[in-house]
Every structure is written in C-alpha cells, then in structure tokens.
Image 1 (cartoon, rainbow, N blue to C red):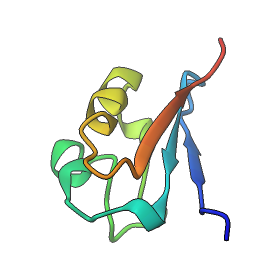
Image 2 (cartoon, rainbow, N blue to C red):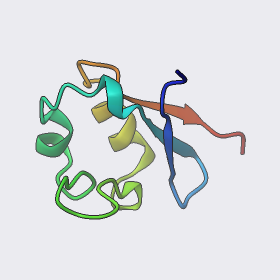
Image 3 (cartoon, rainbow, N blue to C red):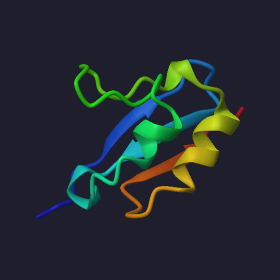
Length: 75
C-alpha cells in the first residue's frame, strides 16, 4: 500500500509542507512551536501561510517522526 502524502503549499511559492499522517507520533512539537500554523482541531489543520519559510523549516527540522517534511520550490 502506498504511503499517504498531503501537500500544503505556502502562498509565497517558496516552500511546500509535506505531511505523512501514518508516520506522525503526535508528539505535539509542531503545535507547541507554531500554534498559529498547526491546529489539530481546525480544518485544514495545517495553515502554512501563518509562518515564514524560515519558521516552517526550523519547526519541521524538529519533527521527531519525520512525518512533517518540506520541499523548496524553484523560484
């Protein structure tokens, strides 16, 4: 079975947040670091437009499970 991958592009076009829900350990680090971006009770739960590219990258690099990743888009 293929792993589910959900993409959340940032409106600035610089970065796309990638989420692999099956890998998520629900540690809550994303919510604690950027609560304005990650809100598990909201739909969509991830709103990358509420942070800069640098803030997203810093937070994603702290994801212990690797469920959150990013790809930089060509400018």
